[in-house]
Image (cartoon, rainbow, N blue to C red; front, top):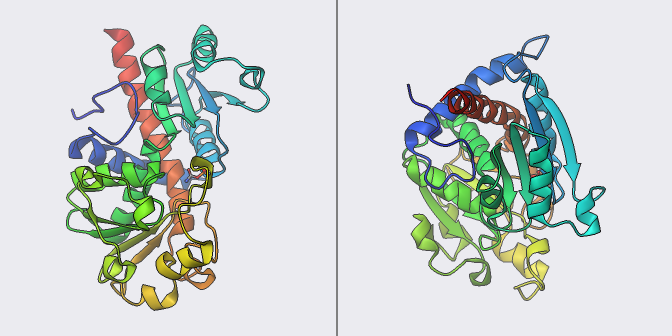
Amino acid sequence: MVGLGDRHLLGTQGLSSEEITLILDTAESMVEIGQREIKKVPTLRGKTVVNFFYEPSTRTRSSFEIAEKRLSADIVNFSAHGSSVSKGETLLDTARTLEAMEPNFIVIRHGASGAARFLADRCRASIINAGDGMHEHPTQALLDAFTMRRHKKKLAGLNVAIVGDITHSRVARSNAYLLVTMGARVTFCGPPTMIPPHVECLGARVERSMEKAIEGVDVIMMLRIQWERQSRLALPSLREYTRLYGLNRRRLDLAHPDALIMHPGPINRGVEIADDVADDPRSVILEQVANGVAIRMAVLYLLARNWDAHEAA
Ligand code: CP
């Protein structure tokens, strides 16, 4: 039986196409649970999940919590603000404290790249990376792929343009690893100051002109500028950014007529995406949010299977 090869989900880098397909297929069954009158199954009964968010989140945090509740887990929510982290406790001491309570899963979002790996190396619990610095946001890429596959019926051969602040985006990185593994063609586009050096090693090509980047593409994924990860704007002005890299109606017309408009959120209307484009019928931004619950249920379910196998060994 195909399973996830690891007890943790730290990134999409290294996930095989079989593992990705298994998660997406499992998420399809989870959608069905979400359509029932009573949206609850006993899969994680008796298991404890700690949701530990050092950075703000609306979508990821709430959809993990809904997913966990639908699977009947016991849940503990921490945020840096309001926990002893704000009194200076280190990540290592926090990890040891959490371990002492013997959770089965720790879902962590942290500003430092590598924080999820740090916990995975020190904790018995399964670690799920809910976004670590500029590194990875694997469940976001999985829900993005799930959304694309539901609309386009495939991932192999899709042309996907990812536009914006690539340098600081964990979403861009996780999407590139996943989509390239699944046989899609990924083009990054953004100001030269927001494209990291050697980005081609992710398997994506770089296009400086937004018009050329989105010509004929099947999917346009817009990214917000990650203000929190840079000390100053690496651009002459925000107006210039919107003029060169904002998705507006004129540019949208260059893409495939059925192109999907995607954004991981939160969106900055009038900056990277025009108001009317965000609300266009081809926009699947809210579907991405809804699909996040099914993907996170699938990941928890598959990792719980690994946990049980690990404990039985
Ligand atoms: N896409 C995403 O991670 O959104 P949140 O920051 O609201 O969780």
